[in-house]
Length: 242
Ligand SMILES: NC(=O)c1ccc[n+]([C@@H]2O[C@H](COP(=O)([O-])OP(=O)(O)OC[C@H]3O[C@@H](n4cnc5c(N)ncnc54)[C@H](OP(=O)(O)O)[C@@H]3O)[C@@H](O)[C@H]2O)c1
Image 1 (tube, protein in one colour):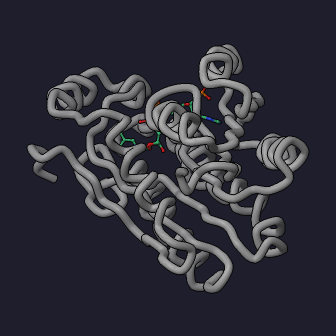
Image 2 (tube, rainbow, N blue to C red; image 1 turned 180 degrees about the vertical axis):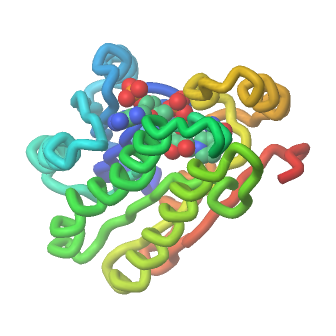
């Protein structure tokens, strides 16, 4: 039997890409899934496909109330929260000179505050359970900065700092994992409004790996024994340079 059988897993940003691939990977292994994202129709279709142990709720991670409601749904339906995957994110790359303040603020709200909202929504439950696993999806951009990635990278550096701080404060009851992918097939690049940058990224993404590859890496971290905490995974296409 899989280690995931009967475990309750919340996934934010589950309506496409990595989050959807994780849901597809974990459902057949017997996990109870609670899926959140803004596109409720996509979550509904995915949930219907994946079977009876899947619940979903419209959830904008920039709203703490929404994220708290998602965590409450998990408790109401399955009584525990074993794993939270803070996966929701966006990547509208641009140059500083373009002053795309709305996009900068949106990245800060979703990629950083969304992660904090997730942590705040589950930490009391995990502390009371004396167990839990919080997986934060960062990026290779949380390790490497390139022109046009400054703000996105800043949010992902922040995710890594938050995860490490959480790990140090919660030793003994909480496992924390930072998942840092390189180029992966998903809808992520569609948020880039700068045409030239988008073209360059399309070229990089010709070598992109599958979202399922990231779900497999995530599963590896989850399946380790309770006393083993895989703190960080960086996973790139073999051909990726930076
Ligand atoms: N793909 C890559 O190459 C790559 C590389 C490194 C890191 N990552 C990270 O992986 C994570 C997942 O991205 P992805 O590649 O799977 O891209 P994606 O296909 O665009 O998925 C992003 C997900 O985040 C959700 N989302 C966006 N804003 C949200 C909000 N305000 N509230 C709740 N959900 C929101 C989207 O759902 P809705 O639009 O329905 O809300 C969607 O489900 C992100 O954190 C991204 O930074 C991806």
